[in-house]
Length: 105
Image 1 (spheres, helix red, strand yellow):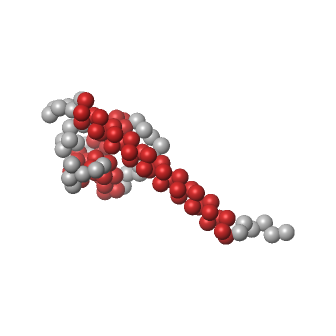
Image 2 (tube, rainbow, N blue to C red):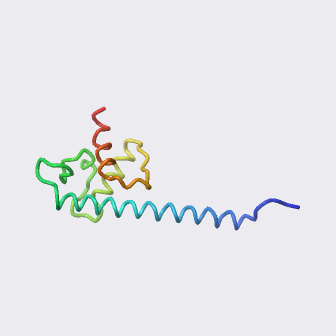
Image 3 (spheres, helix red, strand yellow):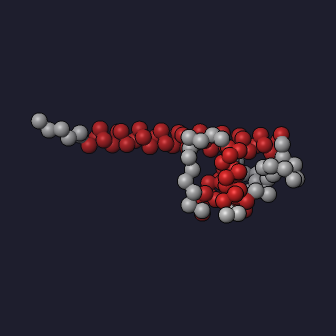
């Protein structure tokens, strides 16, 4: 008896895993941008936490008026510094605090 799995079943399983990863990534990005937008509206001032343009990863921001500008800047910053993003972690304050501290080390 042959125990090998047909190739089309393997491809289908890989496709499901990739779809799930894309979903988690997009969900994380949407929630992060919502967090950044909320921070900018509720707590940010010229000297406060999460001020647009004053965080270290803001150097990667192309256009602050662009959709998902904060997320794009953070993802680009992580790519440049070889930081792997955990798309299951939704503690955005801790994530951003850690990213801010990486350059100081």
